[in-house]
Amino acid sequence: MKKNWPTHSILILAIVATWVKTYTVYHTSFDMDIENMMQQLILFINPLSFLLFIYGISLFFKSPKARNRYIVIASIVLSAIVYANAVFYRFFTDFITIPVLFQTSNFGDLGSSAAESIFLTDIFYFTDVAIIIIALKWLKIGDKVKLVKPAVRRAYFVMAAAILFLNLGLSEIERPQLLTRSFDREMLVKNIGPYNYHLYDIYIQSKSHAQRALADGSELVEVNNYVRSNQVDANEDMFGVAEDRNLIVVSMESLQSFVINNDMNGYEVTPFLNSLTQDKDTYYFSNFYHQTGLGKTSDSEFILENSLHPLGGGAVFFTHSGNTFHSMAESLGAEGYFTNVLHPNNKSFWNRDIMYRALDIQKYYDEQSFVVNEEDAVNWGMKDIPFVEQSVDLMADMPQPFYSRLITLTNHHPFTLDEEDKLIPEYNSNSNTLNRYFQSVRYMDEALKLFFEDLKEKGLYDNSIIVMYGDHYGISENHNKAMEQYLEKEITPYESTKLQRVPLFVHIPNNGKGKEVTETSGQIDLRPTILHALGVETSKDMQLGADLFSEEHEEFVIFRDGGFVTDKVVYAANACYDNATGLQIEIENCQPYIDRATQELGYSDQIINGDLLRFYDLKTGNLLLDEALNEEK
Ligand code: GP9
Ligand code: MN
Image 1 (cartoon, rainbow, N blue to C red):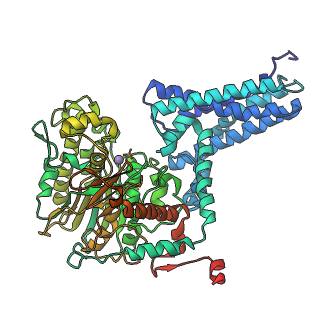
Image 2: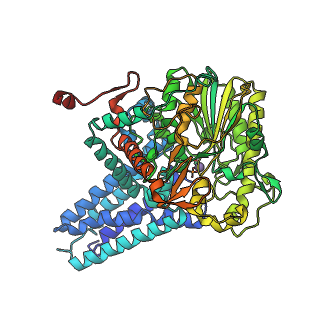
Image 3: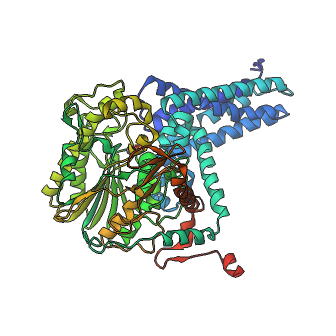
């Protein structure tokens, strides 16, 4: 066999062997939804660029022997990584991310059963290693070239980079903003491959780790002063109106306020929600804004649970799941509530499975808790109607009082429905997205109506308070032309801001005092409002929102991009507008608020980036400053 194998045969063999092995593992060890040919293609090419780089490092070694040895070691390490993920997946149907390695509670269940999930056949995960060793030892196809020419190396790495960019380009087409928004581990692995995914994970985690290490808690003094000086008292009549009741929060996917009490070509879009706006037990907030950033639904959850702003870049659910938080779920858990979230999606989407632990949510009913028949799924997964029906069944079996949060899904871009679920016709504009939006909102409205009926049927209704809010916009500015046609007015930055209103309903069965509240308010106010309604004090909480029922509630909503709305002005795209007329006015009118918005967003970022709540004792309201800092005093 002392043939003259072509130069670098072993390098090529290693790349191909590990590439084929990785691709095979995708299909045998992970349960990934591949929806189209493009995704299949991305899946096929995505291990390649990383493998070219990592095995290519061998080209820098001077001796052929070192090169060959490096290739063997690299293949063993890569196989171990893939194998570890495969075993982890058997337990958690998820990919490894650094924070879970430090959450030892995860491995509690692993112990005894670990041995049972490791099989002799797992040896196949190391097939590529075996092939490489055989090739070196017996076929002697190892590298014998003395020194690799720099020009060869350069050409090689240019090719590797080109493949990486091709991969990223295709992924960007398939899933825009994949890396800035993170979304889902499954989606990351599907698009950039397991190896690049781990590098990306290390990058994200070490970035937040570094920021955390620099914080010592002293920053909290200033933040605390700000929070305390903006704190308002609860409304005496509303404090405890729903004491001891179950709390049901519904996140209504992509629901904006412009469809409420409005029609589309003569068809009522939200008949059920419209009836709630007139209902004697419902407080309907018509000037309520979403405050989410890139993390969309997950940002709205974050704001609700923590009464803090989301981050400017990326989803805080992904970047800071290792932080200490004092969530609404934690407060209610301490009051004896069973805290849970129901959402029929992949549990790692938005990193919920990890983040919910940081938020002290006791149970996540993800897609595996639901029976999803083929006819019950559309667009992103389970349809809202079977979702709410099965959710109520699950809720009926929960210990009470419970705090259940339901996240709907059908009214998600691209707003597609099955024929039988289209209760009204499409709209007629140049935007198919907007045309379908009305139909899909109409379907969600139907689901919410059935949800209320089911709650009554199961005897859960009277003893609950139901809070429902739109999570974020559904129609982006890309559809402004079509929106102008529908709203019959020009969409200025002022109007764009006004379109960020999402409906909020606080429904308290048998309350009898419901009304429309026109106060300017935002998602950051949800938590104090809800906790006070349940009779839970928040005067020690580190929160940036305020109780919407309080007489002192300030009308000032800050958006993640620094824009804001008050009862008097709207600040958008660096211009100041009169809130009542929509006309542009002197910037001086906005200036004091511009500074405060920047200050508040800064404080919120400091809390998250510095993981400052680990220095805060929620019970006593004391700042737990660093020893060193105390000595200094
Ligand atoms: C995913 C769902 C939608 O589970 O909550 O997320 P979004 O894309 O709206 O942020
Ligand atoms: Mn959403």
